[in-house]
Amino acid sequence: MPTPEAQLLFHQPIPDHAFSQDRQLLAVARGSKVLLYSRAGNEYAKQDQELDINKQTITSVDIAPNSGRIVTCSQDRNPYVWEQQPTGEWKASLVLAGLKRAGTQIRWSPDETRIAVGCGSGAIAICYFDEGNNTWLGKHVLTKQTYSTVLSLAWHPNSKILASGYADSKTRVHSALARGFDKARVKKLEEIITEWGNYEVSTKESGGSPVYTKNNTVFAEFTNPSGGWVHAVSFSPSGEALAYAAHDSSITVVYAHKSLREEAGQTVADFSYSRFTVSTTLLPFTSLLWSREDQIIAAGHDCYPVIFQNSGEGWALTSKLNALQLAGTGGEEAEESAFNKFRQMDSMGTTSKDVLGTIHQNTICSLRPYEMGPHGDVVRFSSSGRDGRLVIFPVA
Amino acid sequence: MSYQYVNHRLIDVDAIQERQRKEAEEPTAPEYPPVALRDVEAVRSACLSDVQGDRKYAALERVLVTPPYGGDDAAKDRYLEIFLEVLNSVKSAEVDQILSTLSQKPASQDSPSGVELMDVLMKYIYKGMGRLNNSASNAGVASPVSTHATGASTMSGLVSGMSTFGIGNRPSKDDSGMSVLLGWHEKVVNIAGHASIIRVMTDRRTV
Image (cartoon, rainbow over all chains, first blue to last red; front, side, top):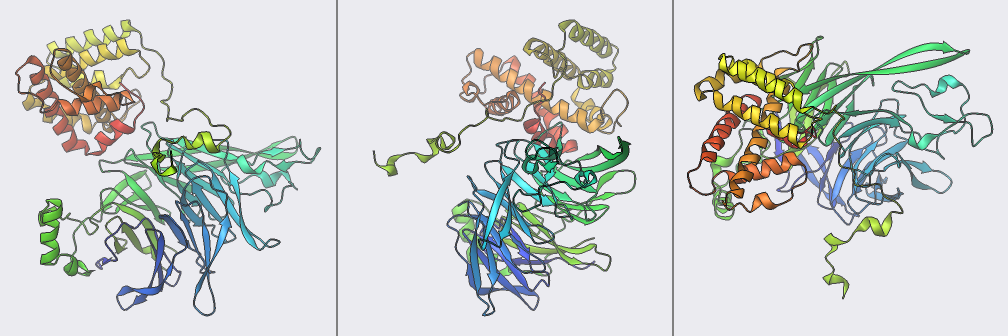
């Protein structure tokens, strides 16, 4: 098995990181800046350019695979879209998302036409480019359901459905259509059927012909009996299953079942959802990644990734990537210099015995797919954490 | 008063910004049917006969399968007493055997899996610690933490229970109760991991 590739980027927490599709560019959030790294040999070398416009801590960063544009969101409530100019410089444009609280997570839709931002006020802004005004605008969805912080977001592969995890221990699957950007009128009633639920339509406003009541359609809502903040949500590659990780140290996989029937000449869809919860003995997970349709990678407060697999009889935790493999952990020697060791002992009252038996020395905050195999499976993934390390793991 | 002296952590930002705000949205527990004291007594007598007949595993499982989630404080306190009686009847050498049987129990029609029962056991251990601590402080042992209002009852049980550990060396009958609970706690963590402690905190279904 190839060994993981580890790099200590800096001595500060990394809330989020993202790679460009060719993996040549790495964007890492550090404080109120986003640092850019380019691939040089076996590691990532810091560029001189920094994305420095936010006033407060950056909470999330994402790179669109095709256009290469970067989005950032921060506790100062202002998301930005960054575009690289032909000169190589990055230029920021403000997204008028109208967030009332800190932005918590930001993600490009798979078709790259919109951006979803979660907010501490419980609102989610769907942002799109308004040609007329030449700016990015945001429309809030799910404004009536909750005031709890949105902790996580995930797009469905069709770019029309969003899943979100909240601090009120609920996971919601809902519409990501935004009034003013998506068409309002329903042409055929079949249109309102999605993979995860039916859109609500209303005939009130338009006098007879149905229109989408877009901004508050929730398809489904899930809560674990043992509760807990929902730290991570993610759709499977096909979009047929949704996984979420809650603070009760579990992951849950939900499958949506659609059954169509004819009613008064119209096709009507009924939905049911089946859930599989795997309760673990570990500390809670903060990030999830589907590597295949039957495999999920999760990582969090235990500082190492674990793999869940669906054997056909249900989901189970099958392996832990927790071995300390010192080979290839670049930057380790520099950090563990004698001077640092004594300084640490002096300032924290700790000794070198406190080094964990894992590569990450603190909570893992984000997982990203790094390299895809020939069948679209993730063969390598990256993790970053509060210890300032970036590790690229092979999927065992 | 100039702005810099305003403690910004105490400003109610919602009063300034949002026109209307719903009540604070603490995650709520799902609804459970109320528990009658008569049913509790039935569980108690069944458990006692199990204990007397040396079927201690059966007694423990009986308490854990029917936690009084919908019960009032009186019913829950009574349940805790049954639970403590069962725990005290088990010799420390038997604990490992009982816990390993319990943790491997598969889910069945009328009983959840062993993993869930271990979580219920952990809830009772923390509630028991909180109870012993309260009775200790009533008896005059100083315990500053137990006077704090800490929100959810599981949390207050947790905090006050932990604070009890190590306060005062005065020998009393509560000390032995606490050492029994701490012994069980250690063994449950060995099997169910730290997750069982985490779930006591996240779970809104209180015992």
